Image 1: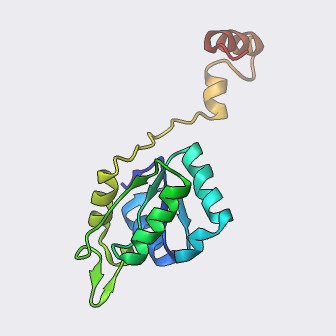
Image 2: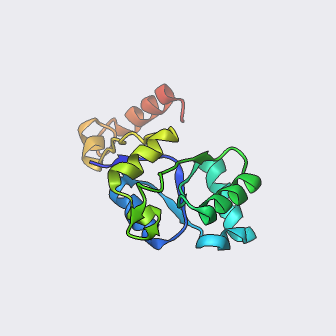
Length: 152
């Protein structure tokens, strides 16, 4: 089972998204290369940073480094994940899209991501079985539970 990452991962393009999805379960923002300089793109990254945190994972080349610098200047404090040129090489092409899921996971682990723990959901049957719905005392039981949880 893939690790579910709390932070939003910022990548350069669609192929990078596909590669990262093979390694982890995470929300991603695609910056379309140097379109990262658009205020709307930078605002999207800033909002994600404030909401959950951001990890920047760009290609190990000059363009990738420039994109990192642009993001870091606008949103100081983002985390950075790196793959080596060799880990991202496929023939003459170098990029995240060529990295194996293991190399991508290793890079993200280096950025010290946070894992989202699986939430346990409850169903209407759980509520019925625990006397919180459909029953003589269900209203009283819900009020007691609300009081215990300090939500009502």
